[in-house]
Amino acid sequence: MDYPFSSLAKSSLIPSAINQLTAEFAEDFREGVDINLGVGYVNDKTIPVEAIREAYSDIMSHPDHYRNALNYGGADGSPNLRNSIRSYYTRYNIGGLEDKDFTNRKILIGANGATSILDALSDILQPGIVITADPYYYIYTETLERKGFKILAVPEDEEGLNTKLLENELTKVSSYDVSFFYIVTVNNPTTVILSNARRKAIVKIAQKLSEESGKLIPVIFDKAYEDIIHNPEMEKPVSGLKYDKGNQVFEVGTLSKILAPALRIGYIICPDNDFAKILTQRTSDIGFSSPLINQEISGWLLDHYIHIQKETVNKGYQQKAAFIKSQFSQHLGPYIESYSGGDAAFYFYITFKNIRTDKGSPFFNFLSRITGDPDVDGKGEKNPRLVYIPGTICSKTEKAKYQLRLSYGFEDPDVFKRAVKLMAEACEYALKF
Ligand SMILES: Cc1ncc(COP(=O)(O)O)c(C=O)c1O
Image (cartoon, rainbow, N blue to C red; front, side, top):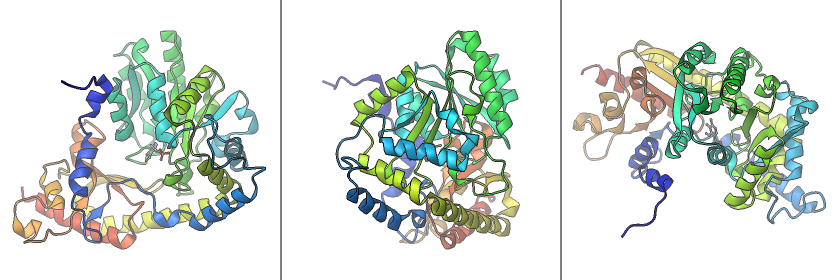
């Protein structure tokens, strides 16, 4: 006899490629020896531990303002936090948004980070085609596929999703089959920043597609990394909401990258209509609300500490990125065709000239120490290993076999120095084949 599993449950039985990869590695990971540049952890040192302590004390001392902070919260989120997010946007003129852009819109807080909002969207919208950039944010595309959506991944260039290619792709599908657009504004894995011209063009294409199909096709901009665009010379992003002509554009944000992932605070700015009502119900269904104390702490940090936090976090990543770039040019120059990254977020996405990076390739086997050659793998104790995200996890294109993502969020520069040297050795090894 079997359990009466749903089709989602059945598809969840198969671990995703990335889960498989990390599970294999996590089993015998050696702290201080092996290096994990695969995970998207933020730098622990950027987490404002003292400010969080102060926030907690202040909240507990002011129960009139922060009511029932350790109790259940409302499913649409703490009014304090929602006000703080709105004020953060208008004070910093984020995305060019002003107070008037928030009328007829709601800020809703997800049950557990932006991830739970993205998951809720996949419950709310009927399965169909989801348009996104290639390479794609594999964690969400996998969720979508498990829920029966089809991914239409359109290659990006240095400005983000290529809208000319998108228009061409759209001639091959029925507009009615398109479910929604999922656009990561600082893309994960490449950290390519979507230009304002492209944002506008994407919204325009979605508007046309909606007219053709007779239904409103939402454009979801995931701006998870927009708070950490650390190169001050980059174009200042304009919010996709500015191009909205009628309840079609949504923005998903998170405080994970700028404050702390463990607070699990993600939010959406969306039209104040049925969509908002349904999303709120989904949050309630999943866990009543995001933990209220975390919401109050996050709001407090946005009100009292974000000016310091923004500065220190972005400076930190900027310095790290510059250091890593110098390591690349010192040790990897001859092997690399190109790379993106170093201006925003904390990933580099490397394209090698003629070295494959996918699972089973000599490069991969070298860094996993599974070549079968004791001189490479280590005699007795395994030599240091290095984990990265192979491009094939983020794209199905041929080129992806030669690509990889490295995260410089978590590890210190001296660990990265070791990692780059290991990669250079792996390149030399791979070129023998
Ligand atoms: C593009 C993107 N969206 C959303 C998230 C998830 O954010 P949260 O921690 O708020 O769930 C991530 C996390 O890495 C991400 O890379």
